[in-house]
Length: 115
Image 1 (cartoon, rainbow, N blue to C red):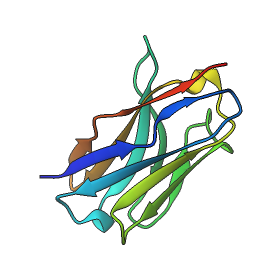
Image 2 (image 1 turned 45 degrees about the vertical axis):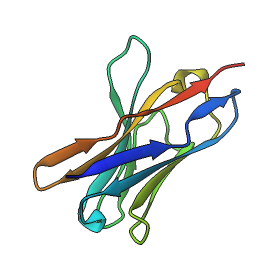
Image 3 (image 1 turned 60 degrees about the horizontal axis):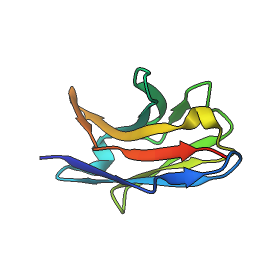
Image 4 (image 1 turned 180 degrees about the horizontal axis):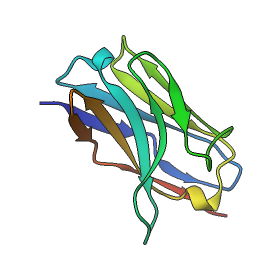
């Protein structure tokens, strides 16, 4: 059974940075496309960034140039570097894994950007 565990959330001031990490267990990590999504209070969940098994990355327009997704197949981990954070980046960030029509989600980690 694939499990995803996120870490690294927290509270920062606008302009600050955070690094989120997600550890996948129970599966062959290098086969999975990985992604991060977020859900702000009162809003629908939205995709933030994704990276294919081959390492190709894509970003939502709202985070381009500020967020960077990366993967380490040796550690079974995907990271999301969040720079120049804005209050509208506040929300619960979820790690997701996709392979062979299967989709898995982590429990989420809270990111709060406030002065």
